[in-house]
Amino acid sequence: MSKPERTASPADISREISRRDALKTGAAIMAGPALLKVHADSDPVKFGVIGVGSRGSYLVDHLAHLDTGRCVALCDVNQQALDDTAKKLTTNPKKYKDYRELLADRDVEAVVIAVPLYLHFQVTRDTLQAGKHVFCEKSLVFKPDEVHLLRTLAAEHPKQVLQVGLQRRYSIYFQSVKKMIDDGILGTVTHIHGQWHRNPGWTMKEGGKGNPKNWRLFREFSGGLTAELASHHIDVADWYFGAHPEFVVGVGGLDFWKDGRDVFDNIQLIYSYPGGRKFMYSAITTCQHLPILSSQRPEFGLVIMGTAGAVEMTLGSDNAPPTALWFREPEPTTLSSGPPSTTASASWAQVGPQKGIPIITPATQVDWQKDSFLARESKFARRWLYDKGIMLPQEDRNPVDTELESFLSDVRSGNRPRADLEVGLADSTAVILSNLAMDENRRVYFKEMETMGVAPPTPPPAPPVAATESGAPATATAATAKPAVPAKSTKAPVITKRAPASTKASDPLKP
Image 1 (cartoon, rainbow, N blue to C red):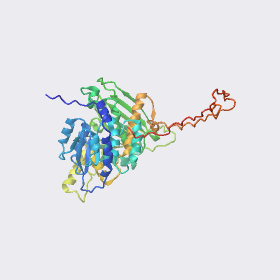
Image 2: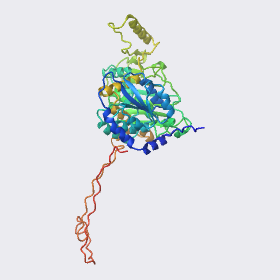
Image 3: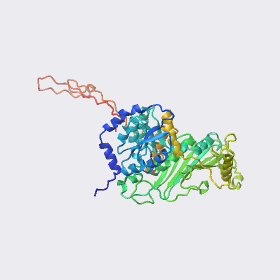
Image 4: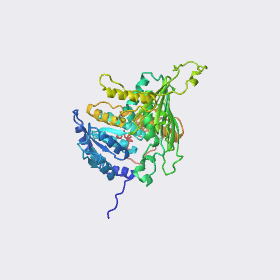
């Protein structure tokens, strides 16, 4: 009877990647540039997927329905995951256990990366160097030095698309609210609340740290709740405020799940943006209640608050698509830099409860020229149900489909993704600094990233020191130079110079 195949731990994976022959990566890099070509509209992008665990398999489910791409290769260290994912596809993809072999495959033009966070930079780096386009799940990178290294590397590959899996930027509702903000419909947006509350969320599988399915629960491999959940909403706050935070403070705790994990099981974060604007974020693992949208959706959502109105919104899921409701302020205010007013209007307390106004998207807008009678009636009926609060308006397509389809389209056209390199690096920076703020219990400024993970400059070489015949340095003064000691030997003294320090800098992109 054959022994069951052993599942590699995250540590095993790291050692194996380091041990294997680097010629595989070299072969991929040599093969890569030939793959960059102009696509005809009818030419599906041939892509591979590296990492087909829970997230990678989910992405394959959505990619399988897109006719603008064709999956030709899959890679994972888990053979069962490879086989199960391949069965979902009709393209008979090649299966690899070493991602560098996939990168050396000349049929692969673009790569979807869904490996654990601690491997994101390494696999993304090798994919770019292999000449492939990249879609990498968030958070884009794990450590401060990777922020700087990936920015430098991507600049060396300007013709390759690099997109990050921040799908809210591809949602019609999220785009519509951004336009409302830009058009001043909400007045001046001063505060945003975000939450992702689960019960229980991630649970420890048998095997602890040695089981790769537990990688999110250990700091060695994961950025915890901040990287896996908060990153989505931090990106929305950056997008809506049109700026990056100045500093972050926060409190995290490992208070409720005593199962061996070392990431926090609850976090509370406050980000301060220019102009005093704030983003407040909460993630817990003991209750999934969402106190917005009439509590018709669980877990996660946002409240955008401005001087003229507010929006409650959520991205939802496959079974509950994105939705949003708009609430007008009874008496919009105009912000002033003068002394504060001491007079309050009673109408604020007397206005009573409000009913959210549905945000109309193209799916519910009536086109009197093109819509059939039945289509118009259907849209009117949906809007009536929205108005009565019987039904929430929702997006007619999952933004995950939209972001993946957009990636494939950008590979063809060379257009810049909505969630591009800089969006991804800003998001990763926020994740890294947020965890630092909680770990060190201090206010962490975002400008600190400018020097974090950056090697100090190489000091200039010391000037050569020439000795005089008396043996004193040439720079010594007469007062400090020691008198020469007469040599007993009759041979002339040998004069030597100290070799200067080496100035050769190491390659910052070498692993």
